[in-house]
Length: 351
Image (cartoon, rainbow, N blue to C red; front, side):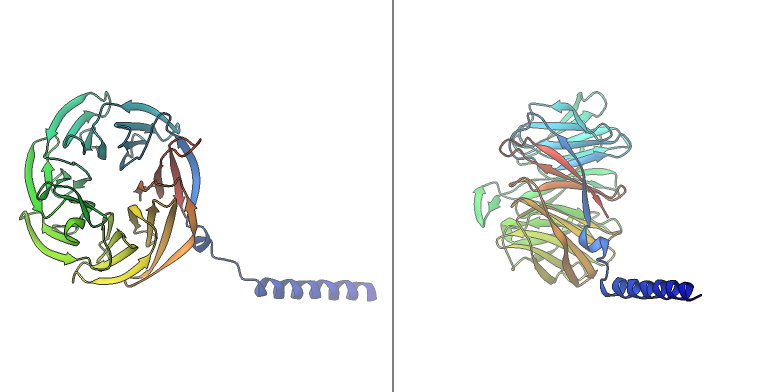
């Protein structure tokens, strides 16, 4: 009896001590410590120099990546995890969009100011649309089922003109390549975002240090929001639910948050030199891809408050573009060649 009592007492003491230890060491929240997990690397042999924007074919599990300095567009099989085709002889391709409704691939090239339309099965050239110069970012207007391309205009980098060219514009084309509308903007349109619940489009115009807001249905500019906190406002993402617009600047390096109802800046956050940034509505996060060689993540506490979470995720320096797929919770980052490391696509999973 004495032995049983002693054994029981020892067990109780062990349980109590175990509970106290467990309570004294709180577990770190997983989402806070690791918002991204690197799942795989997809090598891109023979892709030299800087890469630019990407697009995805969700049903066919393909990724399309522009090699702006390589003058190619790379076709990547995501299930096989490998590059399967190269479209060569493009003139500095910068933007791409895959249209699942027509199975056509639109590639905007800055060198010759064209948008080339390819059959996305045979990769035969279907049509070439000639714009003015510097055809750049490509988006899709879900309201009218049209492709939107930013092009033209005087080009400013670091607050200094690197190219003349007058005014820029957003060109709207249908699936056959016919231009159906054009909205003039002040300078070269960098990143732009279209509302899904409204008719507005927000356009970064670093030449004039502003964000231009246009009505797509009317084809007119509604407002000019000044960007006074920094220069070179290039990448942009939109949070429609909270009426917030995220803008990346390079001098100094900042992530700016604007109220889309008032046009006023809400806050300014320190980050790296960004080429692309994406808002994850399901997790209320912002992923910023920075040229210094890392991806940074910000958590949206509410519409006016943000904080960095986790650690910086290393990538090759002078890389800065990617593509976020909300339906799959995946972030693709285009990492340029560096030293003995060839170009590759880094595939991150959001957590």
